[in-house]
Length: 390
Picture 1 (spheres, rainbow, N blue to C red):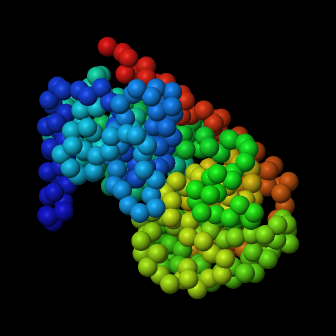
Picture 2: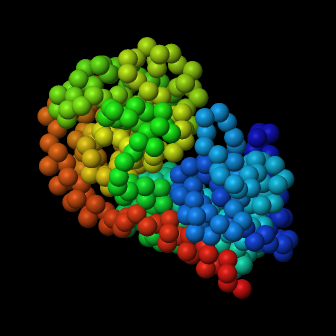
Picture 3: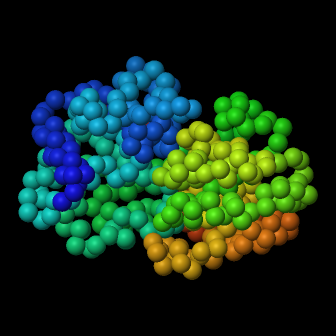
């Protein structure tokens, strides 16, 4: 067994021990992607902070340059003693995964389950998007089902399609409630975007084309290869001719390959290409985006709520459908598929906006969409109600 695996197991045992001690902090603990201030937990936290300013809010947070900082809240660094104490003793915790997951096999499973869960603690899990590619149990050995235990009280979803996918991915062992997706609340806002553009260091007088490829098995295939192939100047010209206005190209990659991408000189070699990883909140980028290019990323489901133009660049479709595999056939998605950079630009040149909206409306109906811009409010009300309960 590797040193890393031993350390991880030791941490899990430590968490179980902490949860056995009947001390509860009257606080709400938040965590997103292991120490970032973004995604669904951020929007629930901000709603709570606004409507209940006296609520004690704690964030598991790792600070870094250009990253957003949780405002006026207690911040604890993941992996430290304070982090584990707040995480396991707070009355309510919110994460964007499946809670803290334990794999301990059949033996002693009921005992472990009782230790990590009780009616005096609420753990809301939000996951981090609508899954297109398979996750959890659908890519793991079926044998692990017997040893799957989680601290999560329930997981949220924004549509019936997501609900079914997540239920499968957690072996139907955690309830999934359709309450909406908090990070998508911003997509229902209307009005000026100048303040947000300034925050993200994006020009106010130009339209935004966002390219956001998902994670592949290598850094090269996670955006570098595609960007090298793409003639961005030709693409921006096509966007100008089809939709009018001046355009800029924003390149944002999956958070797991962010640093490796930044080390590439490709961003310096491209004209009018802006780094879209300077700030952590993808929802904010989607809100100000005028045209999205993605592939198998869950962002396509989020962006569909805006009914704005989008195309899917999927040159490795056949291979990706086999591994990791998809929950939905690509032909069922509401956006056109492109298999080369030339075809991508051609799709832009002849983009049919009316057809785009019609296909999105049908798609949202098919997936049982329940998003209305009030998810953060609903979930924060659940938290307040639990905090007040005896």
